[in-house]
Length: 235
Length: 342
Image (cartoon, rainbow over all chains, first blue to last red):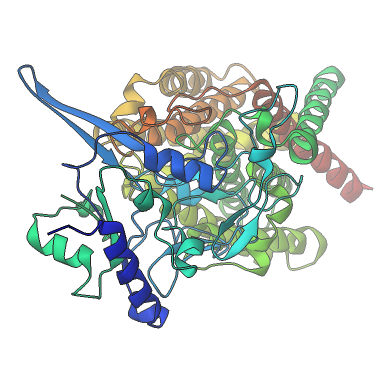
């Protein structure tokens, strides 16, 4: 029997979840480190999708080597924002620019953010980065157009080319591709994963693929002792 | 203070102000060296110091009044003016440091009171209101004590803000607010020791006899707390050059000078310098370790590094604002005392 690409299954799960009101769904991610080959396609897909500048990265892949020769183990650990249930980044924001949305995604309001970087300092996972207004192609003969192109986050289009573009000077982070979800598309890191190592879906839906895979394997989360209750799981 | 020294302070302040304006309106973050994994640096360290000095100066002024009958003394006025100047320049540090400095006012119009920083910001404003009340109304005594209370509030709020950071093992301790309170006393008494003598040696000699003792004991207390802090989790401090700069330059040398009654204002200046080193070491130690091992090497780009050294503009602003705080405190204290005598 021909097996369906899990992207199609997750796409259907996503469409089903989007029928529910936001407060009834609970987005989550599961990363199967046994399948991750460390290709960084998710990282680069994300950088391209959001035109991320130098100093900003939403989903780096940590190359983890443990043990001593000859018992050496190498593991790739993609690190998105963990969209914690109890996010330590939210209460430290002095202007309420970052909050937990009804569907559980931790958002940043670039218009409100004053760039104090308290949230960056208090994320136990280093998942937040600071947009200092740099460009990869600055100090070159011409600033390349792709770096100035618009991108969609939190349901809005943003640009970085204005002197007072709100996104510059703000904290930035992974948001599970909120604007893609609204259009029925899976997060870019899920779509670009060549090993199909990243699962995404509604954790409230027991029939969703992510829940089934979580039920079948031994899952763990990073730094559970921090009390942040992350919604990104690993196998 | 001699005219030359005042002129030097003013020149440094103007240079710092120009650099700060350049950062805010023209260059943006391109002239700073902090990044995503070291989001705070020299300016945040000095902001913490200046705010602490402001609070401590207010408490020192109150102690001077309280220990001499309860009514505000001339040195109390000098202390509170110094407190206002240090607080204003401390806020200038953090305003310049913001990614969006022109939006900083949102903290007053759209505060999130879950953040201790928002509480601290409101208490800064309360302090300025009390300072205005002290300087320009007859209810001096009441406003003096209220200013002291506001200062307790913002130092505690800041201590809890840093001490409550679960992501930063080096700061996440109850010792952090204790250390903030102790260093506020030390920095504040050092500020009064310095500005008080600069403004009027006569007034300081007549009313400031307790300041020397407060400075000496508080420096020793801060050193003791920081050593305990270092061994209780802030191990990165022990290998930090600025931390040892604080111990030697900011504690040992000034304490010896104070015991020998030598150096005029130098012990105060050295104590402030040492405490600045201490605050810088404190801020840096929070970012010494990666939040997740291997993160800094996971994606290579500018500003994704654990290493940080202040840029030239950061230094110019830092020196300029500290000089500006001392110059402004001296200038305003002289103006006000002269106006009262007239």
